[in-house]
Length: 137
Image 1: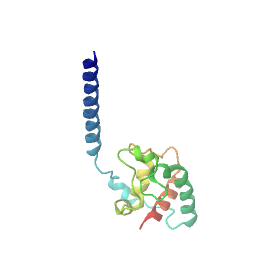
Image 2: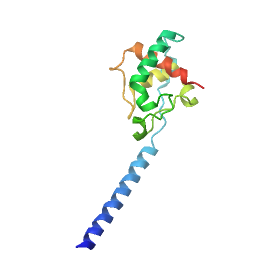
Image 3: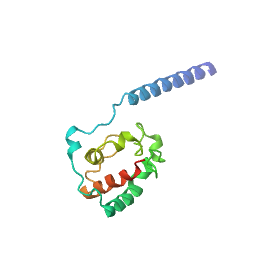
Image 4: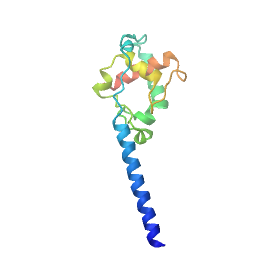
């Protein structure tokens, strides 16, 4: 009886390990997130608007920091369990994108990030874009 239990535990552990490796392999093949070419030319109507940036910070603190972290490094408490991990807004891979590309990503999302098209207004999404630019090193 004890031998059967040990075998069952061994099968369960091996199965879990194989499943975990498959899961990791699946997520490691996710391609970099790129907005469509058309998003590059979308102009930010709030660019340089200091008040909009302040409003963006409020939105960020209440909706984004939990995953992206207080300093935008992708190290928020809720983001630690996500795969792919949340973007690090201080990195050039984010900051080199146009405002339109960042706006498009906020609007449309990609799992595990939500789409905010129906949650935030256009103005609020642009406010977030402005605030994300403050993380540039």
